[in-house]
Length: 222
Image: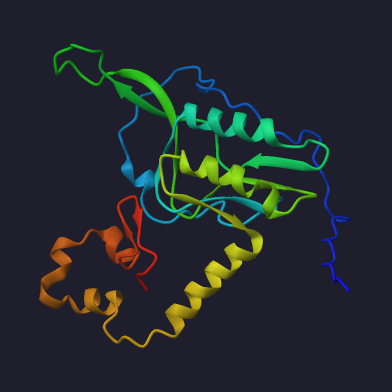
């Protein structure tokens, strides 16, 4: 006699009025466009926002920092909107439209003469931020291949997560920190300034205990 798994209950799932990903403008609507410095700190370290699910059950989690161009946003929007079933699925963005100006000098122009003109706009993404969410009356098997295809094309390492896997990841990290048996942790070595290590570390390395090196993330560091 065969035994079948009980299908999940989606009675509490509410679909939004517009289930597909919204179109994002390539250029922000500003009265006067202002140039900015590089500010690479916008993609360094851990994200403080959009680290937990708000509406959906599945999504794409950034495992490093980087800049999302408008082409990446359109790639995600077209790939997901073509495969989504609006009657039972929905998808939402978890980041702002491109707003950070990137300047560039024209080809063949000599150096000097001030900062170049604004060429395009990007959205900075930090490690640990959810890029998008998907939800509705669906299981991970239905959207996993599509989300993996999108995650591979992003300009930073990313992976597909669910509510359960994301909570488990945070729980495992907390357990590793609390159950760490190694007395020579990165934090203790830096505080004691062993071998004068502080002179080669940035304030960001000290604050994040060496887990984030620039835009890169080291999950093995406790």
